[in-house]
Structures are given as structure tokens and as C-alpha cells.
Amino acid sequence: MALLRLIFGLLLLGWAGVHAEDPPSVPEPVEIRFVPPGVQGTVSLGIFDASGRLVRTLCDEWTFNRFRIGLNGLSTDWDGQDDAGRPVPPGTYEARGFIVGDVSVAGSAFYFNDWIETEDSPRIVRVAAQELLPGGDILLAARLAGGTGALVRYSPQSEARWRTMVSEPRPEQATGAQLAVSDTMAFVVLDGILRAANLEDGAEVPLTVAAKPVKAVAARGDRLAICDEDGVRIFKLPEFSPMDGPKTVPADVVSLALLDQGEVAAAQDGSAWQWSGGDWSRLDLPDRVRSVAGGHAGTFWVLEEREDGSHCVAQYSMEEGRLAEWVPKADKGSPAGGLSVADNQDYFALTLATPEVQRTVAIRRNGATAGWEFVVDKRITRSTDFGWKDGELVPAGGEQPEDLEVKLTGNPLDPSASGVLALRTTAGATGSGLATADGLPLLRVSESDAFQRVMVIGGADGHTARFFQGDGACVEEYEITNLGDITSFDAGEIVMASSGEAEPPPAVEPEAEQ
Image (tube, rainbow, N blue to C red):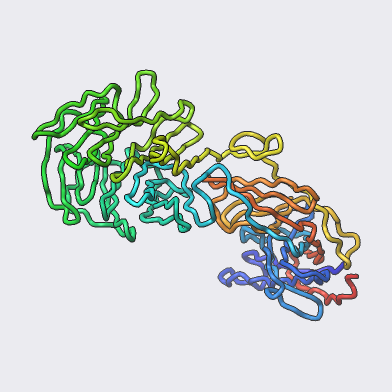
């Protein structure tokens, strides 16, 4: 085995012949040379101390063309420092690594979030509010993985499912989120602040209305209704010119709806009110009203809360009273994000939530059966603590295997090289993937730093694996195949001394390593 020697001087103040003001000398780097064992792939190379601890990752999945190529194989330099940039202490160090050959990584599935269908889907963690658009699309005010708030548009009947309209960093989840849409604009209320975006291209629209804390917002056609501390005001779009108001409301309004004629409001105390004949009148409804929305053909819809705590979506007509209802199952959770209704058909959307699962549904009346049919039914299951239990992936609990043992391809230049390798999952600033048990990176699965929980499960034949990673929005699965195509190699020893003398490493012929 070749012995590579690197000798560092002691840079001490007052040392004979060195003036205290002279800059410290920079040690010459040592050349690390090795002969590839007749295989192609990427190279990971590390420096290990006498105890076997990895002190420096020299090469992380390098291709051969990143090395210097000579008669004695491939080479690179080590500056004598560890991964933190500090000179290593005197001692004997070993340079060794692996060549990862034809190992394949392919994405295979997404779990615990129905919104995420492809890699391009926005990483929705939670839906704060939803609104139906005239053509059947759904607009979501959502929180994304990584602490971003966004308006995203989902098209259930189009191959181009998603369009992110407005996005911004939000360290904290917004409170009191509301959405409303006119013919051309989307309006969102977050923490009492009203913003607007163009429905066509997502560009933010400057608002010319008074910037007071907004309690409720509604839109329909070319009208916008805003409820703040002064009451309800109506504006004509797109000029935002006042049409009516302020109309002082008799209670603390939490939800507002524009009808073909007039307005309906829901109050904090569960009462519902209609603007008619120049004044507000209380509606005689059987249960507490949590949210209101304007329907088509003069109807309006309410989200009701009954005495037993259950909920119901009901459709009303001012002339005919209660027309229809839909009751969610009790175990599906409580409504969150308000009620939204299309203004051209019997079609509504609602978000239900439990502590572990959030479900957003869009439901319309089936003209043939007069019953309800689901157009959208999307669930987000909390999966930050996912694990492995009874042979399957679970969103919480279970085990989290980190290590995987694989049999390696033999090194023809070093018959004594180990044929077994323990792999370990890694996740951090440089991405996620597999490394040796002592920390040398071998195979990167993702370059994103968003995945902080990772897990690996062995496949059926010992050369395959299932790799899972989660970012809080969902859990991704990747299939790793041909794991046995990894070959270890030894690049020699390096003696770090402090005598101040340097001896160049000896030349190593390829035949000497056989």
C-alpha cells in the first residue's frame, strides 16, 4: 500500500528564524492518488483518522473528469484540513472511498397528500380558504412547505392542474383567511388585510379602498363587498368606485355574501341577516350560521352548526325557504375556511379538518339523479412523524429505519476489500440521500434541503431499496435499484507530522496496487 507523507511545520511565535510579524506559511497540499477498479460511475472519497472517523469529505459523487488523470490513475489534493476548515492534528490518516456505478434512483409515489400528484404540484401543507371560480376551477389560499403562503389555482378537469398566482414567505400561519372572486379578480383577507390579484395572470392589483382591518369580503360579477368597522360597503369593479354604503350592521359580521339583489351576512353569534328595503333584517333559520355564500337563481347557501355540534350545508331561497342540504359524516372533522359556492350552478366547496387530517371537497348536484356528486375530494394527512409499521408506511408512529446493508461488487485490484457495506440515510443543507455508516456521501436522491425526515427500507433481492423522504407536505417514495454496483477502493495512508519538513508522496504505478 502506498504511503503518502505530508509534513506541516510548527508555526510558533518567536521560533528561530521566523519574525513575529511574518505571515504564517501555508502548507503544501498532499496529492491523493488512486487507481479506479475497472468500473465507471461517480466517486466519493474521504479522509479518515486512526479511529476510522471521517474528518474530511474530499469528493462527493464526483465524475472521473473532475480528477487529474495521469499514468498513476486519478488524483486530487487534500489541504490537511477537516470539514470545518481546521488543520487536522498530527497522526496517521487513511484515504479511501467508493465508486457508485449503475445505481438507479426513480420516483415512484406520493403519500398522505392528495393535492400532490406530480413533482410540479405545489407543496400544500394546509388549506386556509377555498373559492370556486366560474369555470369550475378551485382557488386556494394555502400554506406551502417551507413557510410560504400562496394563492394557487387548481383545475380538476385539465391536464395543466396548477397555477401559482401569488406567493410570499409567511413564518406564521395566517388567521381569519377569507377568499372571494369576481369576474376578473381574486380577493384574499389574511390577518385582516385585504389584497387582490388578477385571475388571468396572478399579478397583484393595487387597491384604492380604505386600508382598515377587514372582517369579511365577498365578490360577484363586477361587484365587491367589504365589511370593516364602518359597516358594509359595495364597490364597482374594476374601478373600485363606491356603489353603496357604509351600511351599519347590527352584529359582528364574520361572513358576507352578495346575491343577485342585496346581501346576506353571518354574525359571530350565529345569527344571519339580509339587506332588504334599505335595512338589515334577521333571517329565521333553524341553526347557528357559521358562513354564507351567494348561489344562482336568487338562492343563498349557509354552513350551519347544530345543537349537537354537527354541521350541515344548506341551500335557501327567500321565497321558498330551505331547498336542499348536504351533511358531512361526523368523523370527517369540523369545517374550516368557510363555505364557497358557484354563482352559476348548484356547486359548493368546503374544507373539513381534524387534528390529523384536512379534507377539501367540491360537490355539485347531479342533474340526472338530483343527488350530490364529488368533483374534488382531497385529503392532507399529517405526516411529519411518518414511519414503518407492519410492513407498510404509516403517517405517524412506527419505526424509522435508517441503515441498510448491501453486498458490493468486488474490487479486482484489492481482493481483501470488504464485500458488505452499511448504508445510512442523510438529510440536510446539501440534500437527501444515502451515505456510508461513517458519513461519506454516496448517492444523492434529492438536492432540496426541505426533507428533514428520511427512511430506507430494503427491497426484495438485497440490491434494491425503498427510500422515503418527507417535507411536512407529503412523503415521497423513490425506488433505488442495482445497489450492489458499488465498489470500494483504498487510496493510501497519509502521515501528518509537525517537523516542518516535507517529503513528496512516492509515485504509485498501477501494477503496484494489484
